[in-house]
Length: 487
Image (cartoon, rainbow, N blue to C red):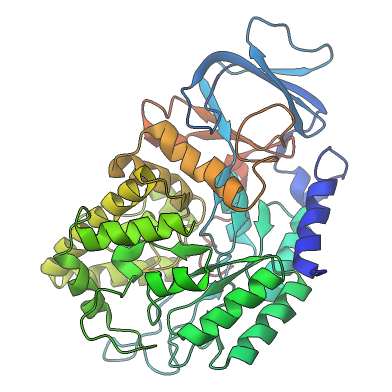
């Protein structure tokens, strides 16, 4: 069947091969290199395949694509703009698989420090988020749930037309939610036909993926999955009323956050199509070990059904008060209102120290699950989920996700593979992005240092190449100083 969303992405890939479009002034001011032929010489190549780094290499970029990866002793092609990059590493552009163009800007609390009706609101970051992602090395991202889907679609269109800077975007349609939602900005679907019509409409409008949310019922989720697949798109879920095994049996493609924070199948006496409390969910996982048979059976089922898991460790780390605060650089780009909101939310967790200990333990358990899942053959994706208590920012969170994957037990090259190649593979675009190989799009990140030895070097981004254009991350970040959370 002809689908609007699928054709939109096909059109993007057809036109993205060469430096064919002229960037608008608003984009050009962030571009440092726009030559059609560029040679990055004397670099360390971390190619995204999971293999070892290659020292002293030259990467040749021609007309927006990678032409060759050669030994640095091989002379660059005649006429190339040569960048001498000793001490630098080059890896593929990050493929962010749980990223948003929104943010929990401020928490609307009443005089009793509770969120009053109608519920929790989030703010669209149409201006700042695309710049932050690109500055951090994210060259492709999935919105993984949209609050303003038309805004997200228009932002994608403007980026593809080189009118504004940002990564390539897979726009996820509006959240597919059930009754009793805590978020008034989400669609409430309690009938199968409503779900089918919603998916069909947004696929035609240009959405290229979908996401189900916590209170959706099993029957409605099944209808949404069927329609998404009929439209040639994939569907993921941050679930609760439906557990992981139920969703996998229905044919869901992806599950967000990992089970320790979202899978309710181990909650005793759980009612059908009902989302247990967060306390019940946490308690159900506290005594479960990752090597126990129930958890291992879950892993086997997910792997057998080819259900991907998206790791979103930074959003949970932000809730652990014993972990570091936002860096000075991040505090400088966040609006004063949003920073106050985040610090207040973080401080409220500290009122009960035991909670911080339990969240830290849950974070460690989730890390252990993700490692076991990959070792069993599962496909792990990566993204920061810049929501929660506001302590996870677009772009910065993507870099932190890599560091936390290494803390979980993955090697640095494995973490980079997860955050680049795996996302491209899931999206069906590994032949174009995700690794550094001749013929692929010139979506690359130039870093100072060696993240294979010190993963924190992923934060030292000096140049981001997207479709062969080299962007200045410092300028991109400076352009949103004090705006994040309100724009």
